[in-house]
Length: 204
Image (cartoon, rainbow, N blue to C red; front, side, top):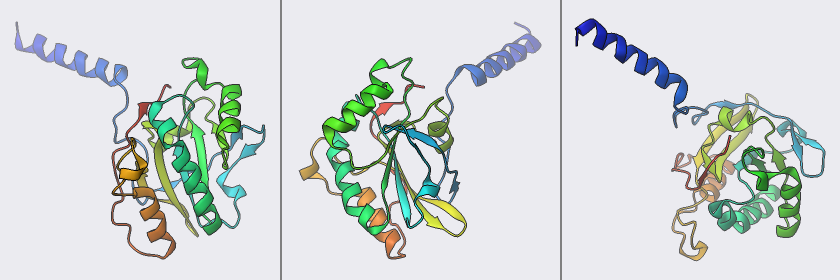
């Protein structure tokens, strides 16, 4: 095969790959970035934005869903984080990033049912059009983004998993999110800022 033909074929493959393969893990926010606000529909039919929380010191934005076994395993821990930290000014804001046309069990009605059955204490928002999860760079359910509210906007302080053991809460050795929030609230450096989110892939 002639060299020019080989080069042409390589260019074609690379060009096609850019359009056919999903975006890389690196897309989305990094630590220190300013996170955009959003206006999403909650399960009560009202819209929720970060700007609604005038007295907040920060937010734990959690991309989660109805059916993923990992998300289900962390459900009680997410509720516990909200109960503990919203009193300190850092509420949980949960967002379902899945496309219900591809995953019917992630419908708005089933989100309402799940939240009622499990006693969610936080907003559970619909990412209609799947615009917010790619913006943040969420890859899995659950995937956490800790934001600190500052005069310069909501700054990303931690990205990743809730802790180091989704299977057994009693066996957790590193409570990543709780440790990050505790450090943020007292102005200390967060020791672990990035971890790998363990969960189900998001259905866009």
